[in-house]
Length: 367
Image (cartoon, rainbow, N blue to C red):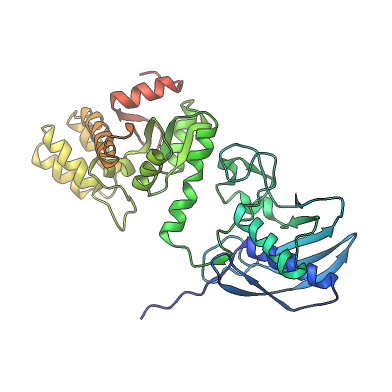
């Protein structure tokens, strides 16, 4: 029997609990644990590690507990300082040490604001209402020591969140990361690039494609990491009204798309070598060469076989097929081009749409 995974609470819930603890402390009540209501109605009891006066306000430390979720902020201290100010009509948020600030359009929070998402803001307001019976004019400052380093392991630099982590959480409840949750975390990249004016975007499955695309002079602002969820991101491209997408990356990943595989994790959808062998066979490769491809461990190992038989044109065919499959996947609502490269950044093949998109985006390669 599989072990049932233990849930936890989000950074947003930590801040909301800190705000409520501070508010109650101001009224003479001190608690080791604070109960808040998550936005989905779940009751959460969140331990308070420390509470103390800090200048004009009350500072509360809550340690993030992600449960069994592989969250990079698990075990990190979230410090929230609540300062009442009658001169304020509402809540003013302050990004302290290790909390990011939004610098690009397209996110749920406008540029210039602390990276505190709408869900946590609603939770904070709700906590103040529970503690005071109303929402007073106040300042809420959030500090996450070490948050700048943690942010480097997230998509924040890509999304234009600078200076630290984001305070996130849709409801406040953190359930062990589902595939769906991770897929949804990738989509904001599309909206940020769109807000920057890129109706044509470059979808890179991973760091190989991203690095090479940058070396070729393709704009970072148009680049979107898809991880293994190429199909999901193509659907998101349609939902967000993009005109064109350039699939750009290592042949080992994108040859799967040519075979109609849109979730490219090797434990779920592989067939890289089979697709390479099939298209090479269709291009005239003899049986011995096909066997050599099928016996290879990686696509890189198979490339010399294709070169040996002078069938490099198969790469353009595979690129065109990947684009065709992607356009069929989106029911013709998106124009797609494809560029296939090696680990070292050598161009293997592309289709005409891929060439046109690359030229339109100003790449600097010589064809």
